Length: 398
Image (cartoon, rainbow, N blue to C red):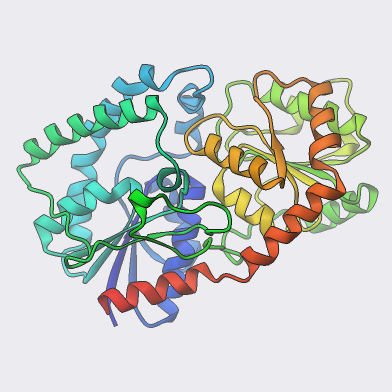
């Protein structure tokens, strides 16, 4: 059995699948350490995992403070390049020192794609074997946009400068002269491009028993009795600049459709005080995190930002969806949802109440859309992404 370090970065959706991977590897007899965003330490401990901080803190407060940075529809990537460069200069030396310490007596480093440069540096310093994994098919199934390519080029130059300052030559061999990597996504959703053919697509990594905090279920069941098959509004860890406006739009649309609306608070911090005066408060239910498999199996549709984890769970439960993407991989994910006929997409800053109603009625809340997502769910549910990932990791290293 091996001592494994799993290093990831980002928000909640970037960590939960890796916590599920870590838990399964533990049950298979391995020792696992998580190197995580410091904001995720408590959740890691609640998941039964040993975790240490790696990199700069990014929690709800920090994300909401910089909410404009998450909205590529209003602020171009080009404008944000200096911020990304400054972040890398602060974050990488800190995370490198921490990760080297964490990996000192470990056998294998499993890193998220965002950490692959850091992993190559750590391998050079410590001699540890390492492997890249990724949760985001957008990075491996389609060419980057011109703006994304420009960002990548700029950050490559910045990384080269940081590496020179650190005085370490990255060890890019992973694992042991066999170029292998893992993509935690289903080939039935999107397939890797020829350039990334060395990625093994395992299927999505689901985390049914993680992050199970819920509120009093009695109130929720009473709401579901009044409003069976509600709409769900869930933007997960996406902060919003104007959450009250976003909430009002969806509350009014749901009311005109005669649907109840379950709103997950998320990092947008949706709450009852933001409701417009003209709405029926009884038709809206606010919740903290509810397990997505449980919630989506009871929903008529889910309205969300296009996070790949939310999409995977919606498909798995045969739940149609409306995607309102703001940035990053969300645009690619939205296009795939439309291409598969399992939902629709809308521009979050241009959609109106009437437009939202039309999209839901004509594209999402239809027998055809439900049938399409049911067909895809059969394929997704036949996969066991976590088990396949563990088997690959063990075959390469253990």
